[in-house]
Length: 192
Image (cartoon, rainbow, N blue to C red; front, side, top):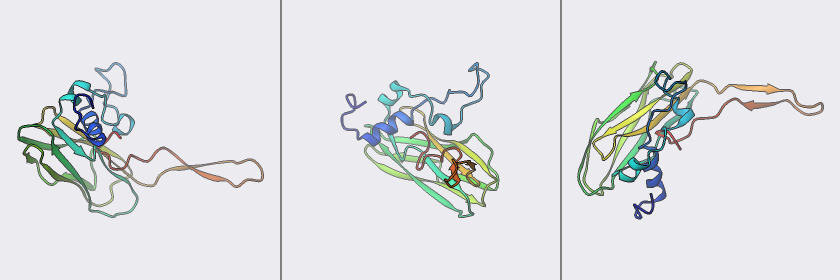
């Protein structure tokens, strides 16, 4: 990446690789009948070197997460900056692709279209409104069309308390609580 695009920063290279990944990783075999793998399990998907090399659009952050929601602190907002690194104007179409059905809380973007001149940066806001959703993991992608490649920026949120488990410590030591599972990546539209 750096050899082909020496002017890109490490964050821009990360965006080029993450946001041009293919989403054809599945949870089951064979691939034809498997369900798409969770964003929390595989991030943005499989890296696509050819798409990353030819990209002309950079996202910062590369993914967006609202983390683990435990209280009704809505609305929440995650700004995502897009930069045109190409030599022509980009007329972008943006949409949310939800992998899990939403309940009580609604994700949205503040505009479905964005025009960027060469070198220009602009911001799209990813928001969560409503009330605290039922416990669970909600995920999807912010799909961007109109650049050299269709881009998919991973999105996630988790609602409810983190589960924990107790284990018995050797005699003479206190029992300790251990976290169960991992917290979703912060500031991912998904694969960090």
